[in-house]
Image (cartoon, rainbow, N blue to C red):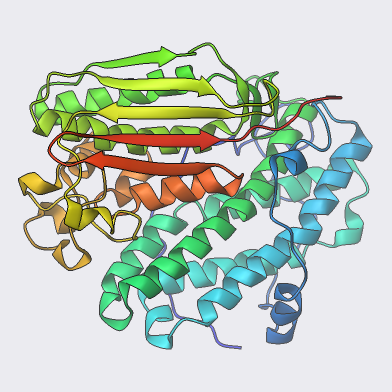
Length: 430
């Protein structure tokens, strides 16, 4: 098996805000333990082992899978069952990511950014395979395993921005279509991989007593799922964040109103909705400001047909910021289709500007205007890939993972409507 020599790992910041990954392993006081009794791996998994794991059948995670163990605090047996489930299937998911990276042309995998990601997957797979599956018989071992999961999650927190930079650097060795296909599949697979680890971490935090300094999920949470998520609160929070950035960059912020059914709640993963809404509002706010439109951005929330919890919701974001140029509309779902080229035709609410233009007319190596002042405001990781053309395709991937959708309707020189549909999950018996 080969191993790629990687550059130094970049600083790691979470892609989206997630459950706390610092906890007291054994339920007492003090800081996290240092995995006492755990022996780190000294060798990498063999090629045949990776191939065997990658070939195993794997179902896509559903919201129902995530809440299958019920509301925390879980019983010891349920918490151990969750740990064993994660220990069994996480190596399969990691092996599939390794296999996918190996199938890329060698000149791409040898890129320092992409090789860093490849080696991170190798290291994570080695670490989890070194943890004996049969040892998960007590809360002490479960706590050690959860701490290992925390380290793995932190290691991969910068995966998407690093891959984005790697593929930009390798754009001469692949077509935009091939890059989009790989990145879209990788992102969707990564969503399930990360959720599996974070779900168990969240269940652990809510089931094992933690010191006051450790942030634990609220009572409405089952791991990463908020069973009483109120979309209007997420929208208001994201609008405040994006509005502050607009004032910093442009000296003004658009007005935003929420109508429809702002009091509706449904079960969903807040960090996914937060990422999607932030990206959509960044587009709508920038388009509105640069078009000098006095019309407020209108966000409409409506319940989808079905039970209140399982039916889901529809969110429409409407702006009158000029729309998307017809020539650009067919490219807005392509990764690395940049959002900024300085022209009036690119101010619509989509990803505008071609891959080849990321270094032409865009300061800071192709980062868009929103990305530049987001960086200066010390924002979270999503901003580090702003301007790389990942906002809309990543948002659609998050929306579609649990059966939702994201659609854009644009009227050029007028404005854009974006429709986000998300499905919930039944909570009967919980």
